[in-house]
Image 1 (tube, rainbow, N blue to C red):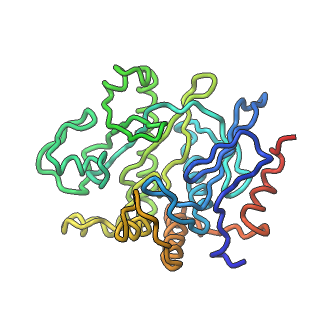
Image 2 (cartoon, rainbow, N blue to C red):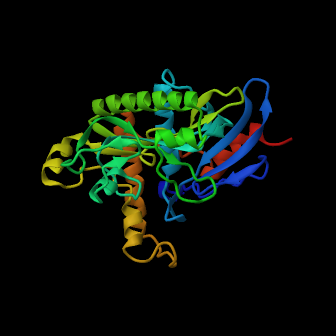
Image 3 (cartoon, rainbow, N blue to C red):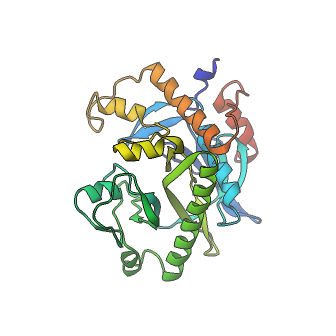
Amino acid sequence: MSPSERILAEARIPELPDPYFGKVRDCYDLPADAEHGARRILIASDRISAFDRILACIPFKGQALTQIARHWFERTADICPNHVLAYPDPNVVIGKRLTILPVEVVVRGYLAGSTSTSILTRYRKGQREMYGHRFPDGLRANQALPEAIITPTSKAFDGGHDEPLTGAEILSQGLLTAAQWDKVQDYALALFARGQAEAAERGLILVDTKYEFGVDETGAILLADEIHTPDSSRYWIARGYAAALETGGRPPSFDKDVIRSWVEARCDPYSDPLPEIPADLIATTAKVYADAFQAITGAPFAPDLSGETPLARVRANLAPFFAV
């Protein structure tokens, strides 16, 4: 089996209890133990998702993202406790099972973005009051903000759309207590500052990122999900930033959206049948994730080729957790 054929398309393992299958991760809830309480197995597949659909599988994407998140979880544990308990496999995290807070925290250091909730999109439409912040006239696309800001959104657990929030709305709607919101803000800004500083040492700009927090059975707030990966964050290549800002172009980045753009140019991705993704486009995207791993962590990406298949390897590494 060639490396390009070693894809973890899914991790459906019937011996594991209480499954939940998301767009990208396959998860299982483990019984509580005396030491850690409730636990969850999170298996990062190689699926790539956009438009609320699975577009393709990218070799080693799950491993790259899991290991980038591991790099950052380990390098920020002194700032904020996180859900990680163990890494039994390159694609797998055993984490504390948390109650996820109903607010998604997005920290932004630049006037950037293209989605409907991004501050650049809204700024171009003339909005100057956003997320409880006031923006002056005359800002240029992609320029640095005077300081990092938090732009929270509601977290849609039912498949709905996230909606912009202000701090006052978070409190008035009872989404978080004042103490929780203060703690989340402190954690998020400190994590982002650490991420920006270390990215700069690697010749990168951490532009913006999202964080997901949850509470454990004691009420403590922990960082969950992932941190500072190319799927949860925007990175620019520092050496090309100044020229792009001067010309109004897009700064160079890890362009992981090549498949998304290719599909969008050929159909209505929300309703039409999806075209088959060319093999060279899949290979290009796989290289993007491998290159991102090396650029962010400073270490070469080493795909795990052990086991007859990736699924067989994952099954073997998770066998101690099989229901008996």
